Length: 146
Image (cartoon, rainbow, N blue to C red):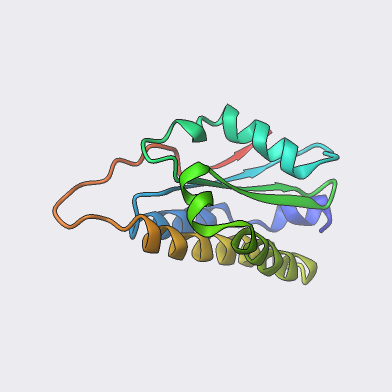
């Protein structure tokens, strides 16, 4: 995953559309964050960004962060307490493995979209929309960066 290729090839509009589609079937929240600096421990960096983005402040604690640090060729998928308790570590590894395959092939946007879709299916299963009740979009759908 070359940094320049990742930055130049990611289709932000397609990623945002995938987030909106995934969130439309659930009460969950999904964010994508791209770090433009080197990180040693992607999980620790993702955890810090998770907090910084206010993802632990969602009403149902069901936010998911897809964190990518292309310069370090590292990424992490991190779920808040409620979704993590329902899906478990094996689920997050499966999401990461699918994303990694696409990234290795240079299909950066596809990897993110596939990860978002898989997370969205889990959120829809575990936190489905309730008919007749609206759902507040608690977090921005845009791709954040630093």
